[in-house]
Length: 112
Ligand SMILES: Nc1ncnc2c1ncn2[C@@H]1O[C@H](COP(=O)(O)OP(=O)(O)OP(=O)(O)O)[C@@H](O)[C@H]1O
Ligand SMILES: [Mg+2]
Image 1 (cartoon, helix red, strand yellow):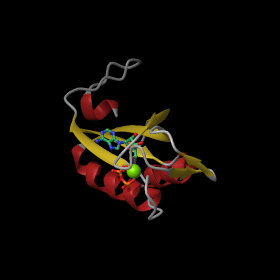
Image 2 (cartoon, rainbow, N blue to C red):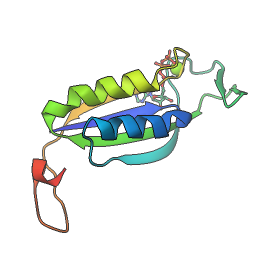
Image 3 (tube, rainbow, N blue to C red):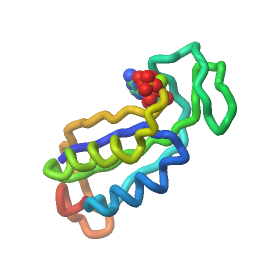
Image 4 (cartoon, protein in one colour):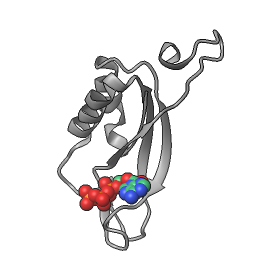
């Protein structure tokens, strides 16, 4: 299994969620975060405002999937979240060693 963590522009959340559901994602975690990337200390536009500070609002997605689905999840996020402007986000893929659905006791891929 893989655990995919992505930072995206907040206004892309609904579109990314719909696209991920369409490729078979069954659940995800969503957090409102702040972060910075390569332009730390420089300006980035967010909702028409220029952020001079080094932290810019982003949405963090966390998605656990069977390994076979990981590539299409990454491709889907990358395609849908892309605006070609700075701050489009970043995607990280981790190996996931265990999953458990609390209600049923199902484990690993059965729990996703
Ligand atoms: N090395 C990193 N480690 C953890 N999170 C990161 C890292 N780089 C970026 N992020 C997260 O991703 C968000 C978006 O990063 P961003 O898209 O600005 O990356 P970038 O490398 O600056 O690319 P770009 O030049 O396209 O802006 C950041 O606000 C931060 O939350
Ligand atoms: Mg950046």
